[in-house]
Image 1: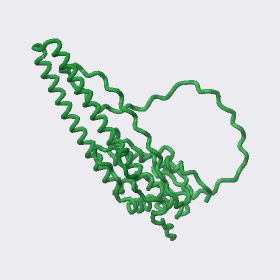
Image 2: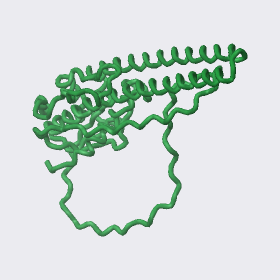
Image 3: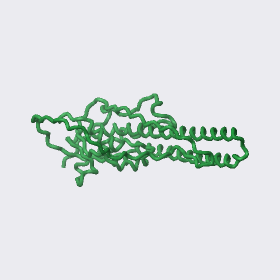
Image 4: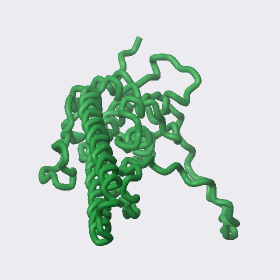
Length: 290
């Protein structure tokens, strides 16, 4: 089998797996997504490790805006994420000259398999356990945010009732105290939300690399050199489907994942992610011939 670029494998799996768990729906709902590429070319199995690339740092939280006047509705930091930017309507630079490409060796005949990453996730014990734990953390964050918002509303109403009795200096002091409380609440809840989001990325990084390695080995064992996204295949038979075998091996080698403690960023976890290496994966057996 010819040497093949691993990047296309990463794009297929990463397009489905790397989700922002706080802003997005729960993991199980996000499993319905699929990569836009819809295909990858497997590499022969290698004993080397496949370390995940460094995670991109999360976007920094925007600076808090000025606090609302006391007595107004308090604004908590659980803002909706911004949507995608509209298409850029600009004139592109001139097209570079593209030289003719010399004739080379023909590509090998395609031996096709199909894979559904969402189906692998649906039966993954590690994925489902992480989804449940992180959903509980998100719910707790939302509950605490609602309680804090009610507290701020009560403080604002109390000030509004007492304002006529206060001197100008007392009014300014109370307004500053209230503004400081609102800003601190925004900072605290934004930090908690960011940590939950990072924990989701940490979890999915562990699952992503195992699915990638297992899919490579299953494809190589069955003589497949082109794997397609099953969601983009109009019709096929079970003989082409690598999903059940990949899912079975993933559950064996990764029954659980490491989830940082609640409130602790993965960047603060001293121990690296403990995950299987390529050499530790069970050998994928070729499909039985009829």
